[in-house]
Image (cartoon, rainbow, N blue to C red):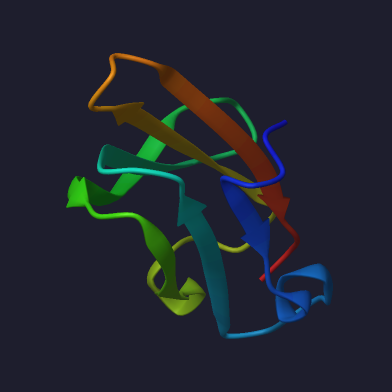
Length: 94
């Protein structure tokens, strides 16, 4: 896991929260893709797909839009130098 790329907010670690916040940081201009997966590994949503400058960003996710249960999200970033970086984490039951 790339610690500098993505950090999760504490409210994701608790059960039954209607919202989660994904906080990520990119070291240089990068194309960022954030996808949400169910417990079986099926992609259920593409949350972000675009270019971001160096900096720290956050995305609010309304978990009420998805079936209840734990899911996972993956952050992938491709830098302007061609490096591909990724990280993932779990969003507990909602």
